[in-house]
Image (cartoon, rainbow, N blue to C red; front, top):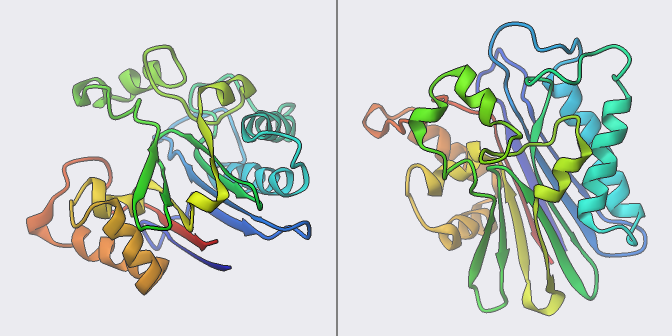
Length: 257
């Protein structure tokens, strides 16, 4: 088994709000977890801890439960991890605030029989078959919302964790039911990759290659190289991407099974 992880902040003077982990439990198999913390606008968010704290607490709990509780499906693990993380600051922070710390989630877990997956919001999971075919597992609800509805903070907040909008992991464990989940027989998967949207830009924003070519970069050059390629594209004035921050936190995880 080969596992490669890399993460880089969008700006050297701001904390990285992404979070990555990989685990190889003593019982065998493996786990990948990737979170993309949602950067709040300036102003009151009801929490004194911040997004990096939240992502680390949630990511750590997801990794622990995914490796130790094979009897729990990933959706239940996400719900329990959200609940446990909320309990860690429920008495000190306003978890009902629409901008309480939150994150997108990608999880993959495998053993000798299956590869399980979970995706919530706009990060990406890639599954590569033995023949080289690559399937992208996406939660595309955010992409289906017209851009004009997301141009103001008030409009975006009204659509966050709401019917007809999009969903992220915040303080309500019920959001786990909104995640895209599934499992694939182990013999049909030779590699998996998790990308936050700062890294998936190589394909879905800049169009430098399809998902199979993106995974090939991860396999041949490594996760850090993919992020470096994205940074080069972001810095090219002729390649304005027209969406979100010019430089975003970027993280990629790759595992050959």
